[in-house]
Image (cartoon, rainbow, N blue to C red; front, top):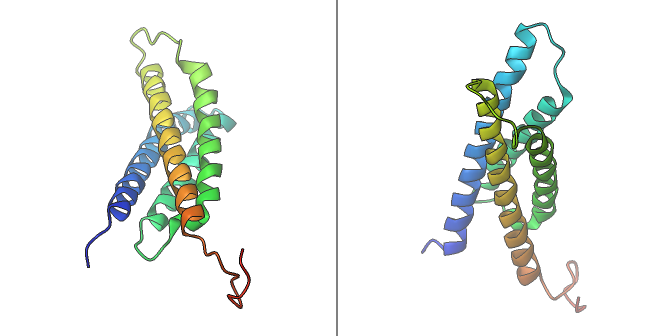
Length: 150
């Protein structure tokens, strides 16, 4: 049985989603750890980015399994795309125009913004491809009896 190109593309995209989600967890996790060590209350924006990263990493792991037809849940990809858009917007507004002036934390945050953008675009691609596959592969007969045309 030959491996279909769609399966290979899906596996590559899900692997990249997982890798970049883990990168975001590490980048923003460092800031949260620094805040905790300094006795500063955790910023909700950083916690939000960690939650979105965790959801994304878990989803990518589940969707990469061969028995999971991820295109059936393309709506979750759309939701994750929207969540990543919010993360990119929040941190982009904070850090894109910021001058790091040798401050490693600001430079790391600026880099994290671009990783957020990559995550956003990856989830957009899988949402669109999942939606296309969903509507292309859905049955034209009713689910239970198969007699009615849908």
